[in-house]
Amino acid sequence: MNDGSQRAEVMQIAEIFRGKVVDVTKRSLIVEVTGTTDKIAAFENMVRPFGLIEMMRTGEIAISRGRGET
Image (cartoon, rainbow, N blue to C red; front, side, top):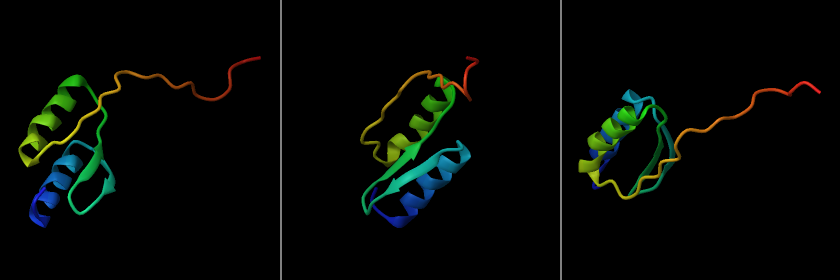
C-alpha cells in the first residue's frame, strides 16, 4: 500500500463487506472478513490490486452458546 488514499480506499472496501480493520501499520492493514465463500472471494478480488500480501481462511466454525444442561 503506497499512500493514504489507497489505505482509505481499502478501508472503504472493508466497510462495504462489513469487514473489521484489526491492525494498521504504515505499510499494511489487517482486515477480518466473515461470510460465504463467494463474499470472501469478492472481497479478495477487490483488494488484490492494492497488494494483497497474505490471506488466511479458516472455514466454518461452531461455538457453543451458554452452558449445556447437566
